[in-house]
Image (cartoon, rainbow, N blue to C red):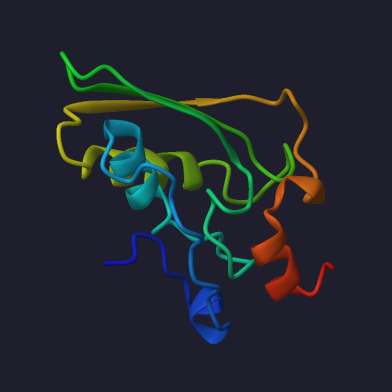
Length: 124
């Protein structure tokens, strides 16, 4: 199930997610879920765009903390993307609650996009 499919994103060919390191860890399972959330204007998921800075899961409590940013403070999806990320994280095994902290440091730029996604976007 793709968490965030807008009409605009459906018109574009979505770039498949990169492989997740350690997908069987609590953090890896959360990252796998977050990779189902796509930016509505760019056909890359928010994790591979470099918008997710931190994923930490407490295995005893199931609490998941996520630090993320947006491509710009004026991003029109500022209200929806963090909520979509939270909902996706809460679908991961062993996560009982997820909190998304919106952060602005370090400032996001295109260099944060992995080479595989950047190549698919024609940035390199």
